[in-house]
Length: 237
Image (cartoon, rainbow, N blue to C red; front, side, top):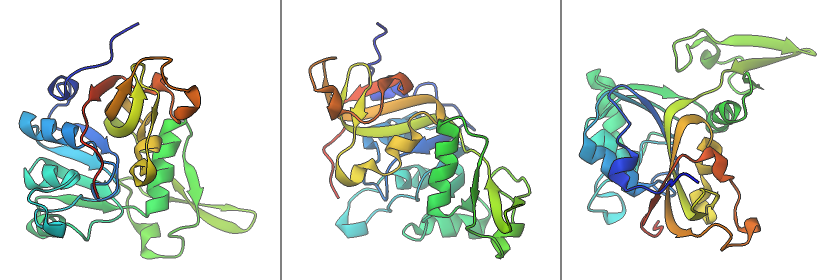
């Protein structure tokens, strides 16, 4: 069996300038901080980042450092962010005003479904969210016109799958094959993103031997995980 375990630096070594990455979590909760830190250290630029939000800036809740995607924004590594909740990080608004950052807003449920469509090999999803609003006339995250379909007298927007080069996910526990589980609020986007990218990197608090844990411990199958990093810090709000 291929050894999937690597250091954080080794795990992100394939991420290059201009790539698209997905990052799990919600405002830093459930975000693989050790992978974000390694990516900042690597210093790649011009990333497109898909995530629920823009993380948290320095000083939020007394934090001495940024959290989650906020670290990438702080380091000037992001050209385009695709997210649903960006109001907690003023760097996004500042970048939009300055013309240095493109921000595509996607309703949270729609964002999750677009990622899930990529994960499960679907051609897209139909949603009534945004029908009859200016959102119907906007271009999507890849600058494509949106399509409106009418089915049995009801209109829907056709939302296309959203896929990335790399997905950075976080687990509470996994085995050495990559079967994993996320506890409590850290589930946010980690399950749906694992499988929606060409390469999936999993940072886990705890890694056990294959067969050591009851299979029912795990939610996501390790077949979608390419690389495992041990030692993700314990979850903190």
